[in-house]
Image (cartoon, rainbow, N blue to C red):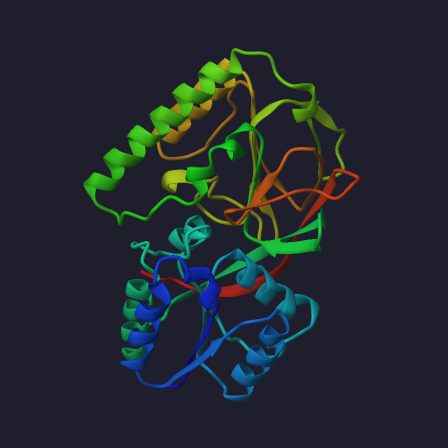
Length: 317
């Protein structure tokens, strides 16, 4: 087999000692090109060296900062251009939803890495192709690339975006069911109160007329699943994203809860819009989430969301 590259950020695992376990797994393997990133500028050098080494795949072991920056270098700066090198996104806490979409069944990155390296030795690294979404208007950075955008009341549930991955057994299904019930029950109670004026969101999708209101959830993603493995609509155009909005009303939240308990968002329900989009303008003052991490808009409060370049990703299971 050829070389597999690993791009990691030790600072992402400084609090739990996970990086030492990752280094141990790497030291026990073979045909591995490991590059530990300390600064943003290191990413360009790492990707250039990976391309020169003609690696089979690039494994990203870090939180969203490294993942989004890697996407940026590939799309904006043309690194890896002319190659077909797939990426593997491993769990790192705030990107567990993304990693789980690509098949991760454990939250511990060193265990997922060990399994991936074993599959590479067997010549078994299946891939899928997924477009990115680009967010413009992000405070402090201007723009970001990712796969999963979320806004609305639901982003106040911090644990939702850092939850552990529990595999695919019956215990996981039961746990997910309870978590959904708890989320919907809590959201239902809060929706019966008075909505705050500063939490209004303005949405303009695919250049249609703007919709203004209070939302329990606004989800834009090119992934096939959202929270707790709930499937997004399966029929999606090649270069489009799933769009799901849920009004912050008791009826809309209950309708959403029924869909989530059924395992998928589907059909037309009160207070819900489920559609496909290529781009959207969103105006909001509250924080939002991209790939599990929190950000804010710049002074204008306006985000421009666009479906952009397609990349190849490795299926982890």
